[in-house]
Amino acid sequence: MRALYVLVSLTRGGSVAQGQGIAHLPTIVRRESEADVEAEFTSALRQNPKDAETRAAYALWLQKGNRLLEAETELRAAVQTKPDDAGLRTAFAEFLALHSQKAEEEYLEGLRHCPKSARLRASYARFLVVHQQQDSKALDEYEQGAALADPQEDPAAFGELLAQYGTLITRTHGRGRSSLARAEKQFVRAVSDAPSAQSEHRYAAFLRFDKKDYRLAEQAYERALELDREFPLALCGYATLLDKVRGDHDRAEQLYARAAPQGECLAAYAGFLRRVRKDFVQMADLVTSDAGRDDPKLQDPEWDNARVWHRLNADGQLGGGIRECAAAGADSVRVLACVLLYIAHYIGGGLR
Image 1 (cartoon, one colour):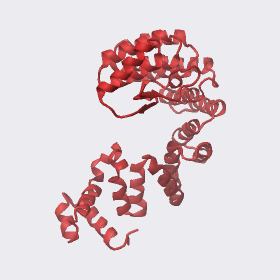
Image 2: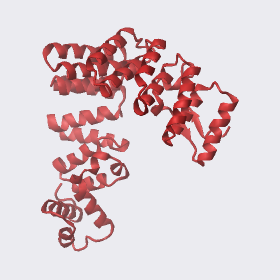
Image 3: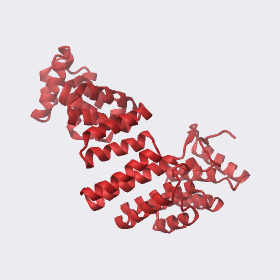
Image 4: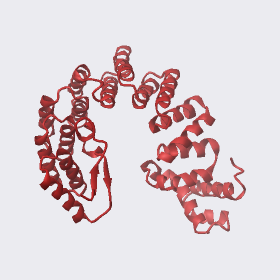
């Protein structure tokens, strides 16, 4: 088999990435024609109709091609083949949540088969919040999941379930002393029973935004980065805290720069370069980089001046300096930004 789509990192008996859901199925893809890809899937399934993981991967491919009825059929067949696989159950229920009216029925059926699955329980609770606006019912599901799930079976999912539970407590009951204490209990348990950079990051965000305890938030961010030095969410969260709360701009810039190659917090970094460093050239380079063009936050009109300047400079149209800037600007703010960019570039970055 030529392995157009080959599942990797399947562990613990071959379940789909331990319940990460269809959107997170790990695949290796070699670019070939659509017909060749489909032929590979159908050939593999003819040889082994009970290969639930290949059916789930096929469903993902069908879903990306907007062939939703076929994708649903394949996912349903995968679940029927492995009814006790929490990963497949989660993938199918999340698919139905986006494309059908029958998601809750599938969630409940899945939980009858997999009552101790942290991933499936958390997914159902999110469904209740997002699609049904039933926060109280979701809190009950999180509470049940926290009591039933084994942290060692899927530590990442267990930690995330507790973090979502804590977040929903403050959203539903406010930030009074009792609700904050109840919420913090979940975050503390997550970092204790399922330690990871992600659980420490979620705890840091709670301490920072809900409890306003910046000292403890810093410590949680540092623990997250001790566990994973390049964890992007912790890099970004800690950078913005140092930048906007502590005013420690040198350390903040180091963290922004470490996150940037991963395409993370680029808008915050660009704002830092403009606001703190007055480095308009580096800001424009960041906004117009490949990663910047893919960042929705950098598509806001406030970054148009950087794109205008970069385009004119690339075309060699800034030889006359201020005159071209004035012609390019649609308003006084854009003209000024263009002029500053011009000066920063051609006078050796003297505005830095």
